[in-house]
Amino acid sequence: MIHALIDPFVEFAFMRRALVGCFALSLGAPPVGVFLVLRRLSLMGDAMSHAILPGAAIGFLVAGLSVPAMSLGGFIAGIAVVLLAGLVTRSTILREDASLAAFYLVSLALGVLIVSMKGSSIDLLHVLFGTVLALDDTALILIAAIATLTMATLALIYRPLVLECFDPGFLASVSPLSSPTHFLFLVLVVMNLVGGFQALGTLMVVGIMLLPAIAARFWAQDISNMIIVAVGAAFAASFIGLLLSYYLNLPTGPAIILTSGAGYLISMLIGTQGGLLWQLMPRKHLEA
Image (cartoon, rainbow, N blue to C red; front, side):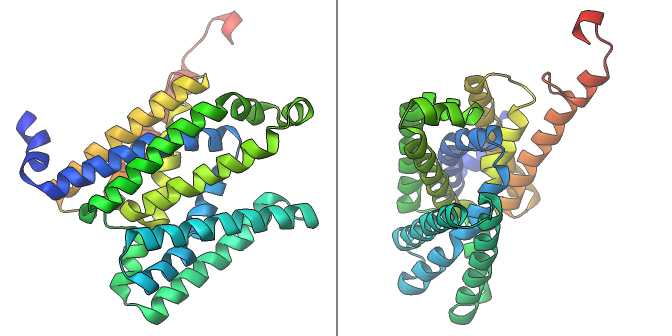
């Protein structure tokens, strides 16, 4: 049994690289996902993952499969969409979710159009679904650097970010950190999506960010424990998904995300903090 779990990673360098990349991604993205869930902005992650597509596509057309070029293009596109959505929200009657939805739909169509016109169907699949088994040193360094910067930044802004999740009006009234905290958090979202699309593609990278975070809500109440559970769930999904893709000859990215989805379903059923089975169990009068 032990050999079945470790042999693929011992024998093949591409499996080790994929595991390291997924673990680095799992360290930085799920904590950001926890705060997205707490702020009821889960769908923003999906919108932003599509928003980086045009920039990544332009970087691909200019420099080919260059990690720095595609990442820089994706980051610029993501930040541009964040700023434009914020500007539209403050200048019109639209709410932030509606403006983000509009920009993300336009970005998705534009990105697909760019790659389709100048590239091949294989190029399009690479951008949309990633190539986790083909991560090179540059991609691994980028993902690890983003994870490190994410953890450091979250530690720096943790208190105002937590307060903004539950009472943004109070934070804005007592501290000038409200707007900078919000913008820094959006930058972290874009950064992790940019790092993750190298492995999982723009369509599925948000899965490793949000699914473990949503599952963690069924196991923990305080934020610090939710972050720990989310990271652990992402680690497990990455490891199991890679093994399933190896032994069952499955596409690696979808295998990882579906494994994470299975973890969410299990958590929804048996999670100790509001899982369905625990809700059905009879409780004492004072607990009801």
